Image (cartoon, rainbow, N blue to C red; front, side, top):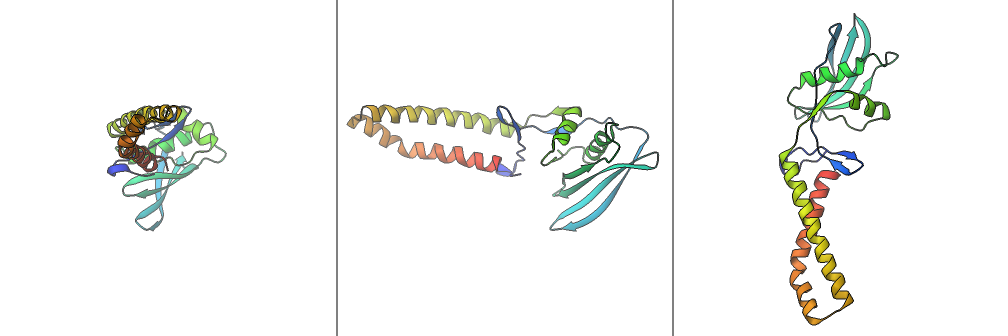
Length: 189
């Protein structure tokens, strides 16, 4: 995950491209469950931990996660032989409860992980910085499209006047390309 201008930029792939959202999972913890957090290790400023869930004293699953700069990132969710009982949901919700004002980075998801996240109630919190940058990117794309049309028109009828217009716009055109790619590289890699 990259952070343009110090801002967190979370991306989810959708059919329309990329969508920026912040998910905070709604607290629906089950009363009978107990949880324990275990430290697995610490390196380079990151602590690796495991959140373990017990139902009436019996192990039912765990989440391995890392915390770096105070932000949790899930490494793996495991609920062996206890699926479809809400344990994974409860684990995610408990982890969110431990980091109430911070988005959990769910990392790469398996098909089962995607289904789990889709089933957990969550709220979408708009990111104004992302929205402003996305709007600017659309403006840049529109302007680049107009410039490309001008270049096509020049190549169809290369006059000295059209050449001068294209030459005068050259630096601006390059600046727009740089802005377009710079923003994409910071948020998409």
